[in-house]
Each structure stands twice: as structure tokens, then as C-alpha cells.
Length: 156
Image (cartoon, rainbow, N blue to C red; front, side, top):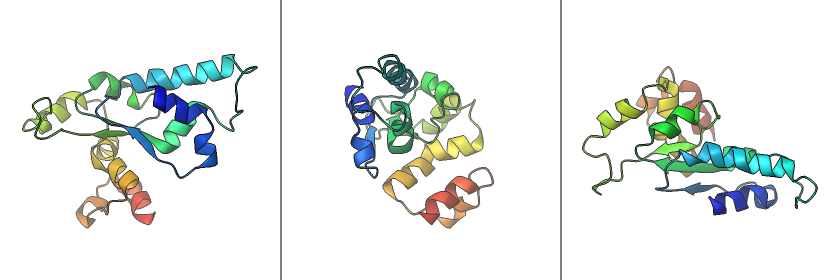
């Protein structure tokens, strides 16, 4: 969490708005709490904060950060409520034993049951395509619930 807080609250992203950062293999359940805690500290300690930012620290994570996870139902349950469906990326950690493979489909159904198809599409691949600038195959661009997200990625 400390590197995320440092990036979001230090002014680095204001100086270098193209910086993309992320946490890998750290889960996502902690992210909503950490963003909320950063904003709370930034607002409550306004008289001592340096630098003065144009936006709240959480907003820098939402525009420039991502977090990966394998099975993290608590984090997924908070994703929509905290506006983080564009920041989370699913992974299965193949071939390691702690990963979900070869039962990834079951894990996705078990943990993503409260997400709609568009949110699932973003978390399962469109977010990674945007961040890493992967081309999206044509057959996935027409998915009705993910069309807007896919078109946004393709147009970048």
C-alpha cells in the first residue's frame, strides 16, 4: 500500500500524467479501504499537506493505477460501489498451485456473480488491453455489454 499512497499523494502523477502503475499478486480487497484512507488523511490534514494536489489521491489511482487478483470476492463486491471496475485485472497465476487454473471458469462464476457482463469483460481482459495496449480481436469488439469499453480501448 505504501508505494501506491506515495504515488497518489506525492504529486508524481500530476508531474508525469502518463505514468501507469499497479500492484500485482496483492489482491484487491484492500484497495477501496486504502483509497478512502488516503483521501480522509489528505482532507483532514489539509493544513500540513504538501504538495497541494489538483485532485484527491484516490482519483490518481482511478486514472493511472491498477491492481491484479486471482480470487478476491470481497474486493469484487466493492469494485462497483467504489468505482474501481476499470482498475482491477483478473489473473489465474498459471501454473502455480495457488492459482485458479484449471478451474478458472468456476472461480470466475463463484466470485463475479454480482458483476454485469460489461464489468466482467473489463476485469477479465479489457482493462489489461487498455493498460498494456493489446489489440482486441474483432470477435470481442461486438460484445453488446462491452462494446463501449472495447471501442474506447481500440480508439486509443
